[in-house]
Image 1 (tube, helix red, strand yellow):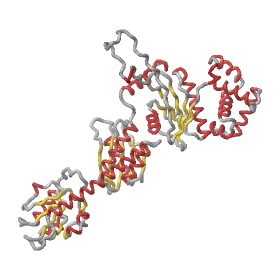
Image 2 (tube, helix red, strand yellow):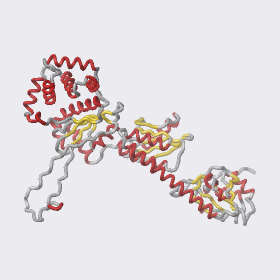
Image 3 (cartoon, one colour):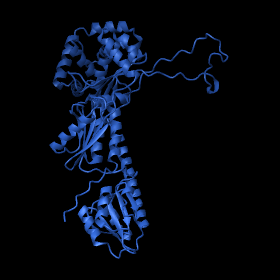
Image 4 (cartoon, one colour):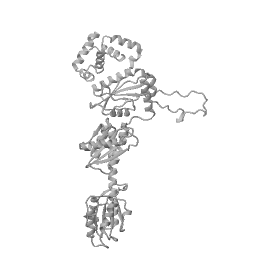
Length: 526
């Protein structure tokens, strides 16, 4: 007699809102007394169903543990074949009162078709088995929710780090025990974390990423595949300029898709450019600048009227920030105007921070709102003057060293950029996370700016720009040779030589406090 052909199970129906239960967990429940007597040991249970029909196929969804006492069992071979065709996960056969033992023909059929067969003792009601499965499902669901909650907290904490994109990828790779890669639409690796998969699996992952890369209409938002024993997944990031999150894991567990979805949302927010009217205004400003407009003409498109602050930033660990990390710093500072680095200095991020608008407090007694026209107010009266925008307060940012300029009008942004660079150098030299360039106050502010600038130009005329910068830095660091060398990235002997040259050209004694004070005043006004 020829061996029967193996029926092909249908595509499984959507499962219940709980993870599947391994058959081994159910068998481990000693109080049930279940014993596997045929078929494979591995199976996943999605449901429990009891039926005494000769052919329960029309009533099965797939993934069931089917319980039966064999009341209408006449052809064990066809019965098992139909169960496998319906996608049943296992068969539980209750002995007594119909059968004193599990029929041998049924055991042979389950072995032949690869369907796990469980012997249910007479003292175990089918409802007890069903209750045990539902209890195991509830426990598994609870474990899954706790795991997802912990993963969500870990990913959110990673997103708040100074390098949020690499940190989120690292945390995601840890949570899934696999490889997490951020790829461009062309398959170029931006960031990655976790153990590298086999080269063939990595190539398959790159191909899968191109499937979801949003370079053409109709691309799916996600895709999955397998390569050997490696599970692959790719997710398109919303608004991320074609960026794709790709995952490679050796095991797929309940909750993995949810954890990956949380990471997709976070990475989409971190990697996406600012959208909406603000982005349109920035684009318009750029176009007008390229077509010959002046900064003063395009400034209203970039933010409210008022002072602007320039920020220079470098990573405290000395690494070079990429565009995503720089953009995340700008977002945390509240600005989308970020320069991730220039050719001559790719380690410094520059952020242009506009002033923030002040809210006008309500007028009137007792906290009442201001009167509206027509409510006892004479028509035509002028409205309350709008308060000017206030300069932003820049706090320290972990993982970054910041140099912040004094809030300045648009016409003096070049000077503010220079002052922010000096503040950053001062912060690095003094090993402080934040240095704000102090505005001119006190007695120095009493002198008219034009007269002060003229005096500074005359006094400092003998000095070249490098010598003036060295003298300014040296005075700001209280004459420290080592700190000045660190701030200027030169040798301490170079600092000594330059300061000596300044003393010669100016014909002054730099050990005299009065001389230092006058020079500092001039350098601040230059």
